[in-house]
Image 1 (cartoon, one colour):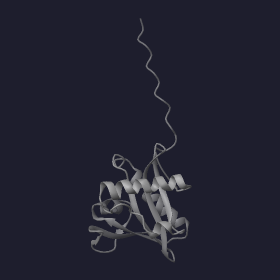
Image 2 (tube, helix red, strand yellow):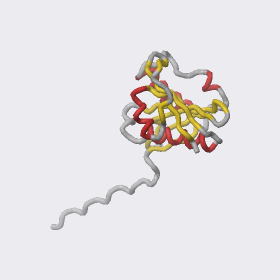
Image 3 (tube, helix red, strand yellow):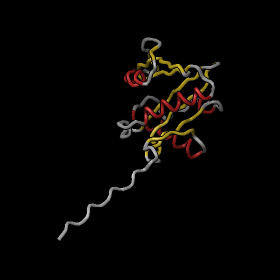
Image 4 (cartoon, rainbow, N blue to C red):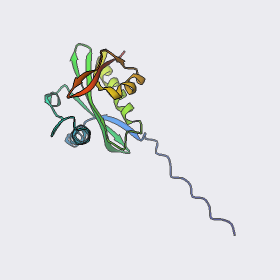
Length: 161
């Protein structure tokens, strides 16, 4: 008797496992803030209660949602700070999703979005342990580490053209 046929593997989903998009509605914005709260308030205790600030209410601020298999797993926000200059901050990826490429996708999405909106340079204040991650993506250190919310951060930037 012949062995049973080996089942075919499931079809490969042509959509990337990690994806990013600008927040489109209230549900997306809630998911964006939930990721940030999980990382910055609950996990890292960087902020007490909430990490939201006036920047979140500014209509020029763009909120980005990172997805893994269609589920919210990361976030970043970006906003103009002067002619041709943008700032990215509040980059967060949920624990358990950091081994993938979502952080890379979020940074690249933010950079591309700022460039598409006429930006020449983007700056960020990066937690010092993440400096190497940003350098690998083409960012450069602008200054020695400084304390922000009691944690060493490095000011970095990248050209957008």
